[in-house]
Structure formats: C-alpha cells, structure tokens
Amino acid sequence: MSNINYDYIEDYLRSLLHEEDSLLCELESYAMENHVPIIHPEVKQLLSVIIKSKKIESILEIGTAIGYSSIAFCKAMNKGKVTTIEINEEMKNLATKNIKRAGYENNIDIILGDANEVIKSITGKYDCIFLDGAKGHYVHLLEDCLNLLNPGGLLISDNVLFRGMIASKELVKRRKITIVKRMRKYLDVISEHPQLETSIVPIGDGLAISYYKVVR
Ligand SMILES: C[S@@+](CC[C@H](N)C(=O)[O-])C[C@H]1O[C@@H](n2cnc3c(N)ncnc32)[C@H](O)[C@@H]1O
Image 1 (cartoon, protein in one colour):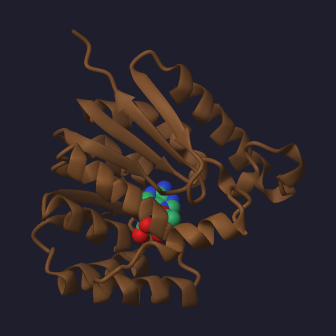
Image 2 (tube, helix red, strand yellow):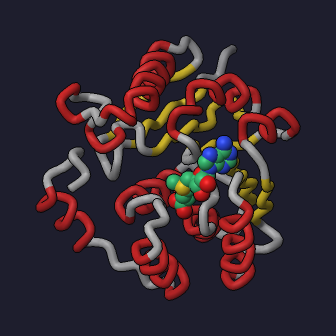
C-alpha cells in the first residue's frame, strides 16, 4: 500500500506493463528480495515515454542504488549518457557489475560520494536531472541541479509524496518529521520557482516533473 493510489489502480497499471528485458526483470526481483528501493515500474514507464518524446540525450541522476534506473534510462535513450552519484560503496559496486552486464559501461559514469559535495565538481549541462537520493536533501540540491540543467530541460524528483505523508498529517510517522518538512518545503520552492513550471504526478510514490524555462 503506497498511500498514493488505491492498490487496485496500481495493480491494474502494472498489469499493463510487460518488461521484456531479462536483466531489468532480474534487478526488479533482486530489489524486492533485498529491500532496495528502486523506481516503480509505472514510474519507469512514464520516464521512458518522457525521455523518448523529448529526445533526452543526457541525464544526471542522484541515487544509483543497483543501477536499475540508470540502465532503464540508457535503454530509453537508445544509449545516451548518464552520470549517476551514489554514496554507498556496496551499491556502487553492484551497480557497476549490473551496468557492465547491460553493456552500458561506456554510457553510464558512476561517481562514488555524497551528492551534496560531488555535485559541486560536476561540469557540463544535462537535458534531465533525476533526483532519487536522500529525500531530505532535495531542497539543498536544487540550485546546484539548476546550474547543471539545460534550459528547456527537466528536473524530475521521485518520492515527493513520500507514502502519503506529505499531503496528510495523519500519515506522518514521528521519525520522518524532518524529511516531511523538508520535502514540503521543496515542493513549495519548485512550485513557486520563477524558472520552473512544475507538475506533481501521483504515480508510484509521487513524481514531480519540473520544466526549466527558457529565458529569452
Ligand atoms: C531510491 S535509491 C535509488 C534508486 C535508483 N535511482 C533506481 O531507481 O534504481 C536511493 C539511493 O540514494 C543513495 N543516497 C542516499 N543519500 C545519498 C547522497 N547524499 N548522495 C548520493 N547518494 C545517496 C542511497 O545509498 C540509495 O542507494
């Protein structure tokens, strides 16, 4: 129960998706068995449609985990370029293996470190930035992300409804209060930011899609 959608809606949406990539299927099972949080299948599908229709060619991701979303992004881009940052060395090593198995070792660069520090050393511009690391850090990473985003690009943030806790006081767990406060602040900022136009989509655990306006 995600507290975002009714189970029957989620089950129905998933019943329409048929992942044919055997490695991605294997990683989904691995993630489930080992409690590694990865993007939900219906979120992956939405991102794939966005990547293809916007012809996105480069993505900066915060939060690699086992490399599932990085691999899915490369598939959707028909290769393209992903830079992904992961703080946990064990995860980084697992992702490196999985990315090699997928044949994307020349397309995906994994940087080991804390995204809050690493992001300051990244140069270049990306068509899309995917925020999927520590949920309480989104608000601190925002300005650095925008500096690395091509105008007309997309900032996409996962888990922004955080199991329903962002929208409902009743659902907030005490130990999650700080994350909830910071995520609410983040959603306020990206909703009111003069250079962003944001839509919050109640899919998966909540996805914010922010268009970075082209200023003329
Ligand atoms: C939700 S998982 C990422 C899932 C992945 N994007 C996917 O869908 O396949 C979040 C990851 O962010 C990493 N993480 C947490 N804090 C971080 C930080 N400050 N810098 C970089 N990575 C971080 C965690 O170790 C974890 O592996």
